[in-house]
Length: 303
Image 1: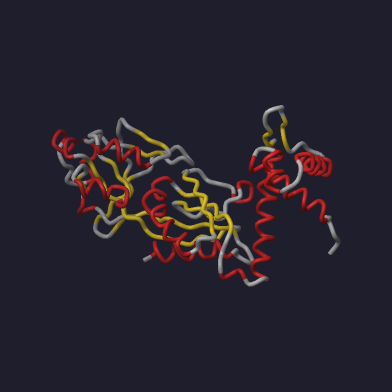
Image 2: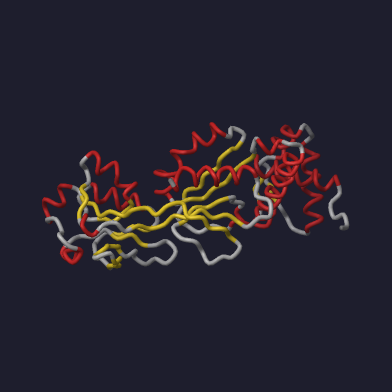
């Protein structure tokens, strides 16, 4: 294998990443105990080698160019892997450390994962957890995520998918709405009700409601004057305040069902669920922080 990187170049990459994280040559220089001029020379050296501008510079600030941001994400991951390799060789692998970046849907994050993170960091205090709550699909390579949680496994052979759980669905409404509009006895009665819609961010199509009848699961398209796209919690809030019926996950509606601000309907047709899966890229050697977090979530959520 031929050498492609000199020691000086690797040092330049580290200073570049510091400057990108801190958005300042001066702060990067202070953190690395060098001069701002040394940071500037290192960035210039990389720009000359790559033939692209990495930063847009003004008298007051610096910011990454599009090319610089892509390069930064890749370099940060590469440096993290080098640090991980050193920990493994020197026997520090038993104490995972470093930044763990995870993307997850808003409701699943709030109700299922975020409540567990204090316990995880009590077990592994060396791991810093960055959470990104969003319902959009992410690109692991370009955005630097270690893990993602989604409602289904994508058609990507480069990802490992492990089911966390099948989350039960319920149909809920406020007592005021049921008093005003009546309580549906069967799914067919929904044609006479205000059904709050949830549109899938990926397609923009309204998600069908699921019901179980005689051990068969059935999909049903519903109609209503309210629609939300991107946050299930919006539909729950609308239902809680009398806007109509909404089908959502039981773990999202549990608080409202417990305090009486929501009532469950169509119980005889319940029992349906939707899955949540944990996704991460194939890797010959999974980092210790990722492996520990995967095992932790599987332990807590699959039970």
